[in-house]
Image (cartoon, rainbow, N blue to C red; front, side, top):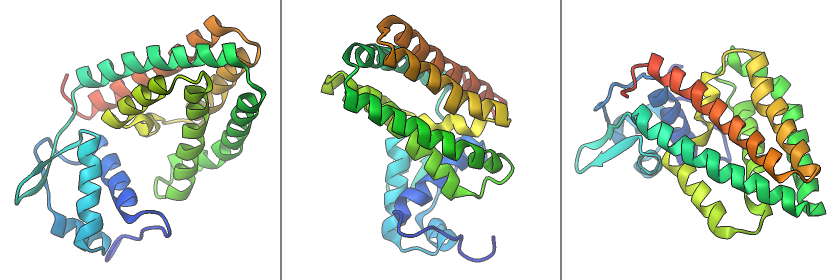
Length: 238
């Protein structure tokens, strides 16, 4: 793209810049230790220093860069061991959250879960086009938002606030939605965002805690395997 890259309004400029740079780091475009200068980010996106600096702080929070005094930021490639550690914990904690949701079966929770799932069913056919057109950031953002909605309903369903905060901390440590970069076929996209979610939703609706836990664990572990393979191909260290 010539000139400053286009960003969407009214979304946070810092959020958008951080998401673009995050994807590029995880796609292997920046070798480990590469310096990201605020001035270069400002010129690339046509923004002031404030959103550029905030974007780098967001990447630091996701453990993808290290801020270096007077030198901007340095890319930090997470190891596959770190990723596996995070996903193992996520599988157990989110599985427990699904267990609690199946025990609760509160009508308002089930309605919210159905709503989130239906939103995903509507956006996934559109998101299939982003596999060939990664610049369709609006559809990608909708997919991310509705996926987050589905999972957050489950995290909150059992009323265990500490559990939800622990899961969110793991999401901050390593970006949860990175797995979308590893999806290469419409079939995989539908399986991940529709079929597997439908299985989880079904077990919660039927009030089967053990089966709901197992379905969520399988969902998280499948994403883990897909993402590890993707990052290994791009030279991420073990």
